[in-house]
Length: 337
Image (tube, rainbow, N blue to C red; front, side, top):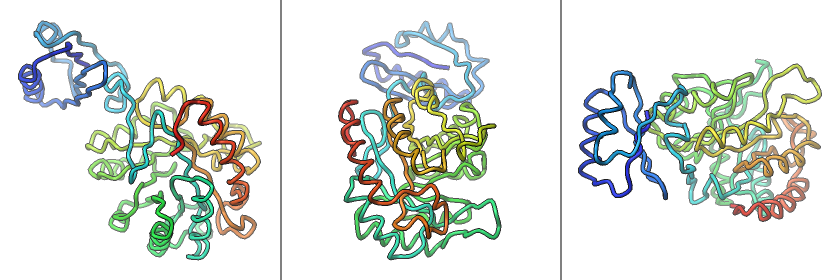
């Protein structure tokens, strides 16, 4: 349920209304925008008499929401959410380029890549310390040591770090991580999402391998319902019948999510396609579709990478892409962070 308040509604009237609603065991999310003041009511609202509420002096209108997701719904929060990551803003009006290797392999490797992508204009460093792999024989990441090396790269360059949490039991090692990534395989790990909802860390939530947009938004709802409002969505391709690419990059998800939700949305063309030559055109497409950023795999020696070398671009290629991104983002009227 959405309660739209009148302009100039008195604070004591609003507080009385909120108290009345919470006394019924419901949760209220308040959203104050430049042109609207909304109370989003979450819970079983079937027994709430909308006519009684609409007759209150401070209320302009009451609407019931049919979608199962509430906190992530743009109807509840008309203004775009801006997530602040160590001073870097992610959301409408800003564009972030997150770059780095699929896996952290050594201190020399991660620091070299971090320096190169920062010099080209990246705003954050990505790198896998814990790696969920389809094969049990594949490289599983350096784990805790990998996080230490990411922190060393952060100290060297000042770039905030983004890395994936694969098991909630390892959350204690992520205290100094700037953005916790929830990968495609854990998108519906509801116990993990619930725990992350009680964290204040920004969460980068990737779309599941074959998940619908509604399922994806419901996973974001799990996090936000716990109180963590710092959620960034990431389109990384979905599994279809097509075999020309690793996954099918759903560019339509970007404008759809912009309509349905207030959360920032970025794209990962590296995982979506598995092909280096497709990264640049899909970043262009994402900018045109209204995305708030892109996450790209960059390795200093892709042919020798321990993970996903085939989809990793070189620092030189990343530099070329960044030059193109700078002009396109400026044309769209956004700020390259």
